[in-house]
Length: 158
Image (cartoon, rainbow, N blue to C red; front, side, top):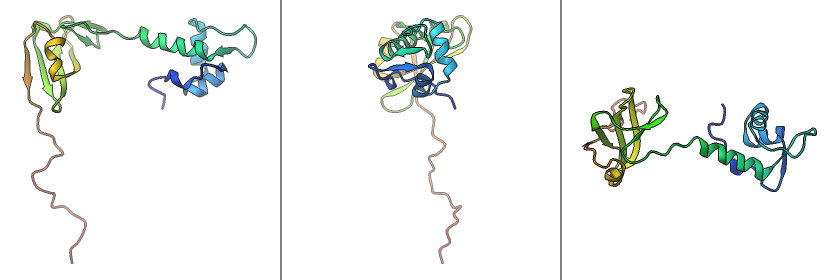
């Protein structure tokens, strides 16, 4: 199964890596590293094998990760369909508490109508959604909690 997030801290900054070594260290395919080189990852020279300095590889991966971040300003939630922070449709937001401190903000996207989610602390709701009326709802009962223990048991009491 592929690695979901590439950890730049696996790269030693005082070392030079070939494309194959960098791929093995990060747990990705060597063609991924070659693609990064085409996208601007600097190499030591044009000789073979292509050597990549560890500090340059780590900086490249950090820049790549930060380029994908889209922080949400106050009053918005990230819409996965639009891939942009969007305001809630009709100014309606619902907060469902998951535990004593945190919960989920749920709203509809004002552009496409897709349901948007954002994890938030209950104390930060006013800062995250200023000027928007947030409906706070209690979490539903869990399915795994039982009032009485199950009577189906394989153990026999003789």
